[in-house]
Image (tube, rainbow, N blue to C red; front, top):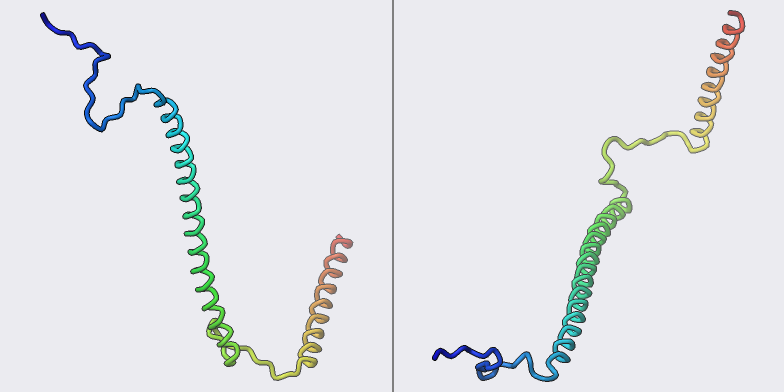
Length: 127
């Protein structure tokens, strides 16, 4: 006679928990709830870590910018500007004399523009 194994007769290994014991459905539900909370907590920690990384990068960038600005300010206080390329422009006139010269040039340019526009208008009227 051959013996057919009965599916209900299971050999249990020591330390093995039977998944069909009473209350195991409650434990499985509890584990799922903890697992879900664990995943949410893990995601929240990952988002927090990402935000912290961004904040650290921004702090480094701001420190570098602050250092550059400090150097620029020190150069200005010393009387030279390292960031400017080219020739420094210096005027011999006082600010009032310079302003008067500029206003004279502006008036001259306005007169030339007005003369040219009058000439063009009279040529169009004559044609």
